[in-house]
Amino acid sequence: MKYEIGDKILVLLSNEEGKVVEIINDKMVMIEVKGVKFPAYMDQIDFPYFKMFTEKRAIEKKPATVYIDNVKREKTPTKHKVAEGVWLNFLPVYDKDVFDDDIVEKIKIFLINQTDNALNFTYNCMIAGDSSFLLKNSIEPLHDFYLHDVKFEDMNDSPRFDFEFSLLNPDKKKALYYEASLKIKAKQLFKRIEEMQLKNEATFSYILFENYPDKVETEKFDVSKLNNAGFRIYDASKSRENLESARSVIDLHIEKLTDSWKHLSNFEILTIQLKAFEKFYDLAVAHYQTSLVVIHGIGVGKLRDEIHDILKTKKEVKSFINQYHPSYGYGATEIFFSY
Image (cartoon, rainbow, N blue to C red; front, side, top):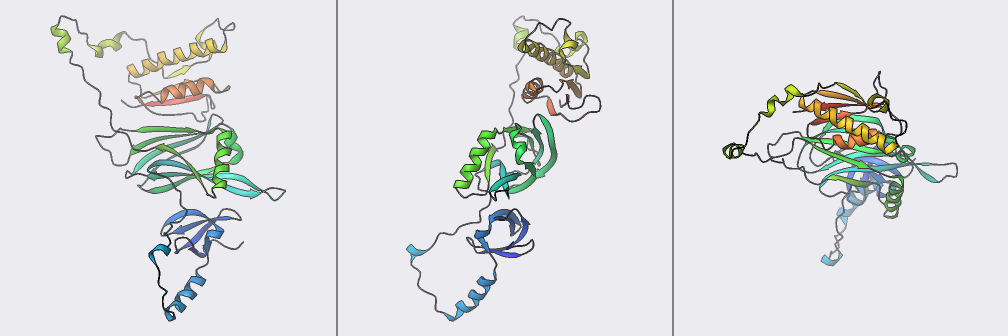
Protein backbone atom coordinates (compact mmCIF):
# COMPACT_ATOMS: atom_id res chain seq x y z
CA MET A 1 0.00 0.00 0.00
CA LYS A 2 1.46 3.34 -1.08
CA TYR A 3 -0.15 5.38 1.69
CA GLU A 4 -0.72 4.81 5.39
CA ILE A 5 -3.01 6.55 7.88
CA GLY A 6 -1.39 9.79 9.02
CA ASP A 7 0.68 10.34 5.82
CA LYS A 8 0.85 13.92 4.63
CA ILE A 9 -0.41 14.29 1.08
CA LEU A 10 -0.90 16.91 -1.62
CA VAL A 11 -4.16 17.22 -3.61
CA LEU A 12 -2.92 17.54 -7.19
CA LEU A 13 -5.93 19.42 -8.58
CA SER A 14 -6.06 22.14 -5.91
CA ASN A 15 -2.43 22.10 -4.70
CA GLU A 16 -3.64 21.84 -1.08
CA GLU A 17 -1.94 19.82 1.61
CA GLY A 18 -3.74 17.36 3.88
CA LYS A 19 -3.38 13.96 5.47
CA VAL A 20 -4.70 10.41 5.08
CA VAL A 21 -7.28 9.50 7.75
CA GLU A 22 -8.65 6.19 6.40
CA ILE A 23 -7.73 3.53 3.83
CA ILE A 24 -10.92 2.72 1.87
CA ASN A 25 -9.51 0.20 -0.60
CA ASP A 26 -6.48 -0.27 -2.88
CA LYS A 27 -7.58 2.64 -5.09
CA MET A 28 -9.15 5.13 -2.68
CA VAL A 29 -8.39 6.78 0.64
CA MET A 30 -10.26 9.19 2.90
CA ILE A 31 -8.29 12.43 3.28
CA GLU A 32 -8.65 15.53 5.45
CA VAL A 33 -7.91 19.00 4.07
CA LYS A 34 -8.41 22.07 6.26
CA GLY A 35 -10.71 20.12 8.59
CA VAL A 36 -12.89 18.69 5.79
CA LYS A 37 -12.87 14.94 5.10
CA PHE A 38 -13.64 13.49 1.67
CA PRO A 39 -12.69 10.46 -0.45
CA ALA A 40 -10.06 10.67 -3.17
CA TYR A 41 -8.51 8.29 -5.68
CA MET A 42 -4.81 7.64 -5.13
CA ASP A 43 -3.94 9.06 -8.55
CA GLN A 44 -5.45 12.39 -7.46
CA ILE A 45 -2.99 12.83 -4.58
CA ASP A 46 0.77 12.60 -4.03
CA PHE A 47 3.34 13.08 -1.30
CA PRO A 48 4.20 16.78 -0.81
CA TYR A 49 7.99 16.32 -0.95
CA PHE A 50 8.26 16.91 -4.70
CA LYS A 51 6.35 20.18 -4.31
CA MET A 52 8.66 21.33 -1.49
CA PHE A 53 11.74 20.57 -3.58
CA THR A 54 10.54 22.31 -6.73
CA GLU A 55 9.34 25.41 -4.87
CA LYS A 56 12.84 26.01 -3.50
CA ARG A 57 14.42 25.78 -6.96
CA ALA A 58 11.76 27.97 -8.56
CA ILE A 59 13.30 31.07 -6.94
CA GLU A 60 16.41 30.76 -9.09
CA LYS A 61 14.46 30.85 -12.36
CA LYS A 62 12.79 33.84 -13.94
CA PRO A 63 9.06 33.15 -14.11
CA ALA A 64 7.78 32.61 -17.61
CA THR A 65 5.20 34.94 -19.09
CA VAL A 66 1.70 33.52 -18.69
CA TYR A 67 -0.88 34.68 -21.18
CA ILE A 68 -4.50 34.95 -20.16
CA ASP A 69 -5.58 32.29 -22.67
CA ASN A 70 -3.20 29.77 -21.07
CA VAL A 71 -4.31 30.19 -17.46
CA LYS A 72 -5.77 26.91 -16.19
CA ARG A 73 -9.04 27.06 -14.35
CA GLU A 74 -8.60 26.29 -10.65
CA LYS A 75 -10.26 23.06 -9.56
CA THR A 76 -11.47 22.11 -6.10
CA PRO A 77 -11.03 18.71 -4.45
CA THR A 78 -13.43 15.96 -5.44
CA LYS A 79 -15.67 16.41 -2.41
CA HIS A 80 -19.32 15.33 -2.41
CA LYS A 81 -20.60 17.38 -5.36
CA VAL A 82 -24.18 18.33 -4.60
CA ALA A 83 -26.31 21.42 -5.09
CA GLU A 84 -28.12 23.44 -2.46
CA GLY A 85 -30.33 21.44 -0.13
CA VAL A 86 -30.03 18.43 2.16
CA TRP A 87 -28.75 15.27 0.47
CA LEU A 88 -28.11 11.63 1.27
CA ASN A 89 -24.73 10.61 -0.14
CA PHE A 90 -23.51 7.08 -0.89
CA LEU A 91 -19.84 6.07 -1.07
CA PRO A 92 -19.24 2.51 -2.38
CA VAL A 93 -16.26 0.74 -0.81
CA TYR A 94 -14.62 -1.86 -3.04
CA ASP A 95 -12.85 -5.15 -2.41
CA LYS A 96 -11.39 -7.94 -4.58
CA ASP A 97 -13.18 -11.20 -5.33
CA VAL A 98 -11.54 -14.56 -6.04
CA PHE A 99 -10.96 -13.48 -9.66
CA ASP A 100 -9.23 -10.26 -8.51
CA ASP A 101 -12.12 -8.16 -9.84
CA ASP A 102 -13.42 -5.11 -8.01
CA ILE A 103 -16.69 -5.70 -6.18
CA VAL A 104 -18.66 -3.42 -3.85
CA GLU A 105 -18.25 -4.66 -0.27
CA LYS A 106 -20.23 -2.00 1.59
CA ILE A 107 -21.60 1.52 1.19
CA LYS A 108 -20.76 4.41 3.48
CA ILE A 109 -23.69 6.78 3.97
CA PHE A 110 -23.32 10.50 4.62
CA LEU A 111 -25.85 13.24 5.34
CA ILE A 112 -24.91 16.49 3.56
CA ASN A 113 -26.34 19.85 4.62
CA GLN A 114 -25.84 22.44 1.89
CA THR A 115 -28.22 24.96 3.49
CA ASP A 116 -27.79 27.86 5.90
CA ASN A 117 -29.76 26.10 8.67
CA ALA A 118 -28.41 23.98 11.51
CA LEU A 119 -30.69 20.95 11.79
CA ASN A 120 -31.65 18.34 14.34
CA PHE A 121 -32.43 15.00 12.75
CA THR A 122 -33.71 11.54 13.63
CA TYR A 123 -32.53 8.86 11.20
CA ASN A 124 -33.92 5.35 10.84
CA CYS A 125 -32.53 2.85 8.32
CA MET A 126 -35.03 0.12 7.45
CA ILE A 127 -33.75 -3.14 5.90
CA ALA A 128 -36.31 -5.74 4.78
CA GLY A 129 -38.95 -3.83 6.74
CA ASP A 130 -37.03 -3.88 10.04
CA SER A 131 -35.16 -1.06 11.70
CA SER A 132 -31.43 -1.80 11.44
CA PHE A 133 -29.94 1.55 12.52
CA LEU A 134 -31.43 4.45 14.50
CA LEU A 135 -29.66 7.73 15.23
CA LYS A 136 -30.54 11.14 16.69
CA ASN A 137 -28.09 14.00 16.22
CA SER A 138 -27.60 17.42 14.60
CA ILE A 139 -25.74 18.76 11.58
CA GLU A 140 -24.31 22.24 11.06
CA PRO A 141 -24.80 24.34 7.91
CA LEU A 142 -22.56 23.41 4.95
CA HIS A 143 -21.31 20.28 6.72
CA ASP A 144 -21.24 16.53 6.08
CA PHE A 145 -22.23 13.94 8.69
CA TYR A 146 -21.13 10.30 8.46
CA LEU A 147 -24.10 8.09 9.41
CA HIS A 148 -23.03 4.43 9.11
CA ASP A 149 -22.08 1.59 6.74
CA VAL A 150 -24.53 -0.71 4.99
CA LYS A 151 -23.45 -4.08 3.64
CA PHE A 152 -23.88 -4.20 -0.11
CA GLU A 153 -25.98 -7.37 0.02
CA ASP A 154 -28.42 -5.58 2.37
CA MET A 155 -29.10 -3.05 -0.37
CA ASN A 156 -31.07 -5.82 -2.13
CA ASP A 157 -33.56 -6.01 0.77
CA SER A 158 -35.73 -2.97 -0.03
CA PRO A 159 -33.73 -0.44 2.03
CA ARG A 160 -35.55 2.68 3.19
CA PHE A 161 -33.94 5.71 4.79
CA ASP A 162 -36.32 7.76 6.96
CA PHE A 163 -35.55 11.20 8.39
CA GLU A 164 -37.28 13.69 10.62
CA PHE A 165 -35.71 17.16 10.59
CA SER A 166 -36.25 20.19 12.81
CA LEU A 167 -34.43 23.49 13.13
CA LEU A 168 -31.70 23.60 15.78
CA ASN A 169 -32.68 27.24 16.29
CA PRO A 170 -36.50 27.29 16.07
CA ASP A 171 -38.13 29.88 13.80
CA LYS A 172 -41.80 30.81 14.25
CA LYS A 173 -42.15 31.17 10.50
CA LYS A 174 -40.79 27.68 9.80
CA ALA A 175 -42.40 24.27 10.22
CA LEU A 176 -41.91 22.48 13.56
CA TYR A 177 -40.50 19.45 11.75
CA TYR A 178 -40.13 17.99 8.27
CA GLU A 179 -40.11 14.32 7.30
CA ALA A 180 -38.26 12.86 4.33
CA SER A 181 -37.93 9.27 3.17
CA LEU A 182 -35.87 7.59 0.46
CA LYS A 183 -36.48 4.12 -0.98
CA ILE A 184 -33.93 2.59 -3.36
CA LYS A 185 -34.60 -0.41 -5.59
CA ALA A 186 -31.72 -2.73 -6.38
CA LYS A 187 -31.98 -2.01 -10.12
CA GLN A 188 -31.76 1.74 -9.50
CA LEU A 189 -28.76 1.25 -7.21
CA PHE A 190 -26.79 -0.76 -9.77
CA LYS A 191 -27.54 1.83 -12.44
CA ARG A 192 -26.29 4.69 -10.26
CA ILE A 193 -23.08 2.82 -9.44
CA GLU A 194 -22.45 2.15 -13.15
CA GLU A 195 -23.03 5.84 -14.00
CA MET A 196 -20.71 6.85 -11.16
CA GLN A 197 -17.92 4.58 -12.45
CA LEU A 198 -18.30 5.83 -16.04
CA LYS A 199 -17.95 9.43 -14.82
CA ASN A 200 -14.97 8.45 -12.63
CA GLU A 201 -16.75 9.79 -9.55
CA ALA A 202 -16.45 8.45 -6.02
CA THR A 203 -20.02 8.95 -4.78
CA PHE A 204 -23.64 9.46 -5.81
CA SER A 205 -26.40 11.36 -4.02
CA TYR A 206 -30.18 11.72 -3.65
CA ILE A 207 -31.80 14.97 -2.53
CA LEU A 208 -34.04 14.90 0.57
CA PHE A 209 -35.23 18.51 0.31
CA GLU A 210 -34.04 21.82 -1.14
CA ASN A 211 -35.34 24.30 1.44
CA TYR A 212 -36.65 23.79 4.95
CA PRO A 213 -40.43 24.38 4.65
CA ASP A 214 -42.33 27.37 5.99
CA LYS A 215 -45.00 26.95 8.64
CA VAL A 216 -48.44 26.31 7.17
CA GLU A 217 -50.93 28.74 8.67
CA THR A 218 -54.41 27.30 9.13
CA GLU A 219 -57.20 29.72 8.45
CA LYS A 220 -59.47 30.28 11.47
CA PHE A 221 -63.18 30.24 10.70
CA ASP A 222 -65.36 32.86 12.38
CA VAL A 223 -68.25 30.81 13.85
CA SER A 224 -70.01 33.96 15.07
CA LYS A 225 -71.29 34.51 11.54
CA LEU A 226 -73.06 31.13 11.63
CA ASN A 227 -74.45 31.86 15.07
CA ASN A 228 -75.84 35.21 13.90
CA ALA A 229 -77.40 33.50 10.88
CA GLY A 230 -79.44 31.22 13.15
CA PHE A 231 -77.30 28.09 13.10
CA ARG A 232 -76.88 26.20 16.38
CA ILE A 233 -73.24 25.99 17.49
CA TYR A 234 -72.06 23.09 19.67
CA ASP A 235 -69.05 22.99 21.96
CA ALA A 236 -66.68 20.46 20.39
CA SER A 237 -64.59 20.30 23.57
CA LYS A 238 -67.42 18.32 25.22
CA SER A 239 -67.63 15.76 22.43
CA ARG A 240 -65.19 13.43 24.24
CA GLU A 241 -67.81 12.76 26.89
CA ASN A 242 -69.73 10.55 24.43
CA LEU A 243 -66.74 8.96 22.73
CA GLU A 244 -65.80 5.30 22.99
CA SER A 245 -62.93 4.62 25.39
CA ALA A 246 -59.47 4.81 23.86
CA ARG A 247 -56.86 2.06 24.09
CA SER A 248 -53.14 2.27 24.69
CA VAL A 249 -52.55 -0.98 22.74
CA ILE A 250 -54.53 -2.21 19.73
CA ASP A 251 -54.14 -5.64 18.13
CA LEU A 252 -54.89 -5.66 14.39
CA HIS A 253 -54.63 -9.41 13.83
CA ILE A 254 -57.76 -10.23 11.86
CA GLU A 255 -58.94 -12.90 14.31
CA LYS A 256 -59.04 -10.17 16.99
CA LEU A 257 -61.29 -7.98 14.85
CA THR A 258 -63.87 -10.43 13.49
CA ASP A 259 -64.92 -14.04 13.99
CA SER A 260 -65.80 -14.54 10.33
CA TRP A 261 -62.65 -13.94 8.33
CA LYS A 262 -61.47 -17.23 6.78
CA HIS A 263 -63.46 -16.63 3.57
CA LEU A 264 -62.05 -13.10 3.12
CA SER A 265 -59.45 -12.15 0.52
CA ASN A 266 -56.17 -10.53 1.50
CA PHE A 267 -57.47 -7.17 0.28
CA GLU A 268 -60.65 -7.47 2.35
CA ILE A 269 -58.63 -8.41 5.45
CA LEU A 270 -56.28 -5.45 4.95
CA THR A 271 -59.26 -3.09 4.52
CA ILE A 272 -60.80 -4.22 7.84
CA GLN A 273 -57.44 -3.88 9.62
CA LEU A 274 -56.81 -0.35 8.30
CA LYS A 275 -60.36 0.72 9.18
CA ALA A 276 -59.83 -0.50 12.76
CA PHE A 277 -56.49 1.28 12.91
CA GLU A 278 -58.03 4.59 11.77
CA LYS A 279 -60.80 4.22 14.37
CA PHE A 280 -58.51 3.68 17.35
CA TYR A 281 -56.00 6.24 16.07
CA ASP A 282 -58.75 8.88 16.00
CA LEU A 283 -59.86 7.85 19.50
CA ALA A 284 -56.29 8.17 20.78
CA VAL A 285 -56.03 11.68 19.35
CA ALA A 286 -59.48 12.68 20.63
CA HIS A 287 -58.49 11.57 24.15
CA TYR A 288 -55.09 13.30 23.89
CA GLN A 289 -53.10 10.12 24.47
CA THR A 290 -49.35 10.56 24.57
CA SER A 291 -48.66 7.24 22.82
CA LEU A 292 -50.28 4.27 21.11
CA VAL A 293 -48.92 0.77 20.40
CA VAL A 294 -50.24 -0.86 17.21
CA ILE A 295 -49.71 -4.64 16.91
CA HIS A 296 -49.61 -5.46 13.20
CA GLY A 297 -47.51 -8.63 13.18
CA ILE A 298 -44.54 -9.34 10.95
CA GLY A 299 -45.73 -11.30 7.91
CA VAL A 300 -44.71 -9.73 4.58
CA GLY A 301 -44.96 -6.24 6.07
CA LYS A 302 -47.88 -4.95 3.95
CA LEU A 303 -50.03 -3.84 6.91
CA ARG A 304 -47.04 -2.30 8.69
CA ASP A 305 -45.99 -0.34 5.59
CA GLU A 306 -49.54 0.93 5.02
CA ILE A 307 -49.76 2.11 8.63
CA HIS A 308 -46.37 3.83 8.43
CA ASP A 309 -47.38 5.63 5.23
CA ILE A 310 -50.56 6.87 6.95
CA LEU A 311 -48.63 8.05 10.04
CA LYS A 312 -46.35 10.20 7.88
CA THR A 313 -49.37 12.28 6.86
CA LYS A 314 -50.67 12.83 10.41
CA LYS A 315 -49.75 16.17 11.96
CA GLU A 316 -50.34 14.88 15.52
CA VAL A 317 -47.62 12.24 15.18
CA LYS A 318 -44.36 13.38 16.74
CA SER A 319 -42.54 10.15 15.88
CA PHE A 320 -43.07 6.42 15.50
CA ILE A 321 -40.75 3.45 15.70
CA ASN A 322 -40.82 -0.25 14.87
CA GLN A 323 -38.20 -1.80 17.13
CA TYR A 324 -37.84 -4.99 19.13
CA HIS A 325 -40.27 -5.28 22.06
CA PRO A 326 -40.14 -8.19 24.54
CA SER A 327 -43.92 -8.70 24.21
CA TYR A 328 -44.40 -8.21 20.45
CA GLY A 329 -40.96 -8.76 18.90
CA TYR A 330 -40.77 -6.65 15.74
CA GLY A 331 -44.50 -7.01 15.15
CA ALA A 332 -45.59 -3.69 16.68
CA THR A 333 -45.15 0.04 16.04
CA GLU A 334 -45.17 2.56 18.88
CA ILE A 335 -46.59 6.00 18.04
CA PHE A 336 -45.80 9.16 20.02
CA PHE A 337 -48.16 12.15 19.79
CA SER A 338 -47.54 15.88 20.08
CA TYR A 339 -50.44 18.32 20.48
